[in-house]
Amino acid sequence: MEKYTAIIERCSETKLYVGYIPGFPGAHSQADTIDELHKNLKEVLEMLLEDGPPKIESEFVGTQLVEVA
Image (tube, rainbow, N blue to C red):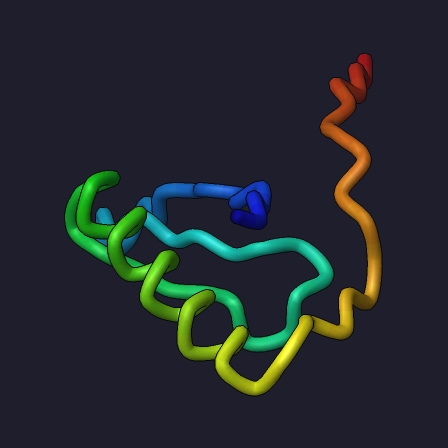
């Protein structure tokens, strides 16, 4: 079983949760709830993986807090 890290944001205009898998082309979705988004992302990954192993374009490293005056 493979595991992928999803980045999740909430759109201030639509109030939808938006998620994507960094470096994995086409692995993105949106939903009204976090649970629905998780389900959607899982379905997208399953479909994309039917074509074989992903061609990961980059590796997620982490997040960084940048402070400005």
